[in-house]
Image 1: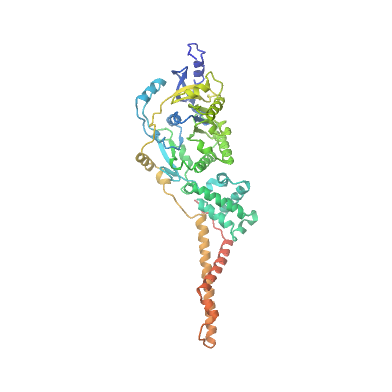
Image 2: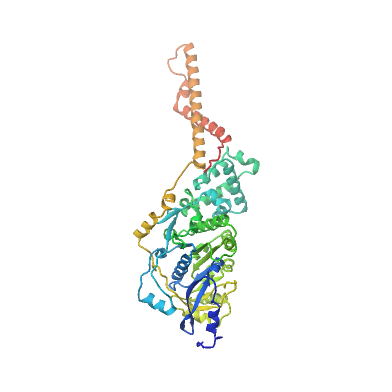
Length: 526
């Protein structure tokens, strides 16, 4: 496969497929016959970044650096970026890189004008678990459909959960956090609460038990921290810095990397919230926002069918809102086929073929690429660190020729910033004062608890009054009769602590039934 001066040589044909006229990201220089050709640049049109993409490759082949390279150029082009940082090693995008012999050599090889540059960055965490501005959502905004998917409820249980949300909304019972939802479910299966839903179907005790157990398991994943107030406005991710560069939002997930259900929950809510809020825009010159989900296999391992259907649908539809989504993982088979089919831009780093399963995965990966003059099986096992096989969508939406590429070096720090710098960046953000402190205002749990406490107090007072009145009558009656040497057995029983306790119990039960049968308050306006 030696290079030729013939204009129609394979190398020229490949390079011609990347000669775009509009704004484009510079990925690197073409590799052909083992030689890097710096005059043949491999690029991706900025307008095609909302067609989604995949960055794949074995551990240590440079996937994270590729993610960083693309994110830097998006930011420089005025496009906001969201990075889900599972391993905690992309925070360096906020700081200038360190020049060294390797970066200098790489820049010369690929005709890159390398300059150490940091990019405007905000750091976030899920509900304050780990460093970063806390991201929270209310149970109400999350909604019964997404909640049912996360809790893995069946259709009947999902309908019941929808009924619970409807009841809470009608009664002005704000569902802010998980204890609010738990309180409403428990109330609606009590003797007093059953009547509240009787006219529209009711809620079976069995279904309520399933929902409550699912909520308990969900809380054990750390979800209780994610639900609450102040709720994060996802529009914050669409901001640009004062100099016009797109803001890079880094979600630090190192502290919750062992809780994939929590991360999946956030992903579903975030994409659904953006899809709901953003208008249809079709194809733009540049996307409004591009997501990168590193270690994407953690999203899909053990995921429910409902979750996979939700992700597939969201990825398919959110493109029209100007949003791009990139998954970063080890092999394409980590991503479900229906999702993979939506990813128009591919950066495939080296794969290994040490085992029969590796060899099978390699052959499957090769089949996902367009026809190519390369021997892709050989090429993919021989790529070096920072090299990849690339195919993207042209400005007309057609796949470009497969191009082996030596990638450019990121200009920001290739590694995490230190903990002190991260803490300073978080606390100096204008968003910190808005979202850092959790707020637990009066909502469903507090309202139900207050009504129950008031009913119990009233019932206890009524029982005590009844006991006192009875004692007074007994005393008056005794005064009209001959004195007794000993109190009667009846008086001993009435005056005993056991009787008063029993009376309070009866009164409390009666009061609780009365209060719950008329329960309902006006909805608080925010």
